[in-house]
Image (cartoon, rainbow, N blue to C red):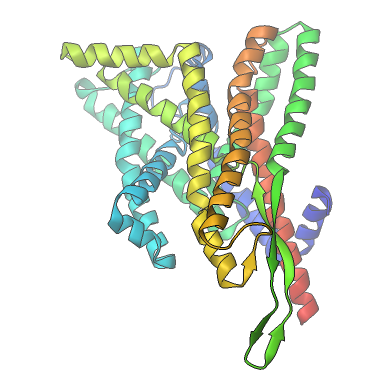
Length: 427
């Protein structure tokens, strides 16, 4: 079923149409909030500051364009993503949380509640970092104890805005289509596209460079879809078995191991981690303690260095791809399930040898997926340096997220349409 055919069929189905319209409604609310600026913002100075910083461009990308106007949602969903990363790591290291995560829906709800609570101090901390940087850059008039009223208003607005986006994302996941947090980032990227294109055309007269970027863009989209859909199918055979007086015939199926089972999550995680040290470091660059001031200044300077930034970006994307894959695919559990139902992989003994085989296979194909994601993440910087077109520097990350979200959402739509066609057939 093609993409447009699936969309058309979804709009003909009332409950799916309601879900799509609900999602669009939440995105409209988000775009409205992205146009509500904080008090006293100098918009002209803000544009100059953002244009000169790759880090701020990334932060604007993941705030859904909210930072470009220093709006009440300037932090975007970054605090929530960071809280999710921290909770995921804690789940693997604290036995009580690990046990809680295995307690079904109750456990998931509890962990989600802890994640929301952790989002508040992280949003406050990141809000302080952004506000201090903007005040020093001349974007906002004052921030600090000397102007307590304005300071509290800015911090309350940034923290509340981030929590509202977290809430909108969860509403989309619950009542709409697709992953809400990814959708908010997706909407911000799409919302920024017309502005980015117009800026590029205004400052760039080299049509050969523009044409080469357009061709590269098409090739990158094709490669992303190819990798996202690529999978290794591990065959599984089931022997005939007798239960009571009935004999169940054997059969064959396969385990689809995707080359990139993590999707766009590693990119989102990596950027969130990259942004945090610089945001926090901004706050301590005026500290009266010399060692803290020097450390903070060094951290901020390091993250503004393109070579260091992109090298760390690449490494983090690769690491998070492996981390997320290991978290979502547990070979021992899969091997146990195969054995329990009388199945086996041809040529591999059931039990531990099956788990080891699956682990080796997943590791090998994840290497390809992780390297691909890392290359796509840093490629825009390299292309920008080669072609001289700097305004589209973040294109690779944006394309990866947009294509990933669209592909995943269309898969969900098709799965729900298929489910409804079966329900209709059964009735």
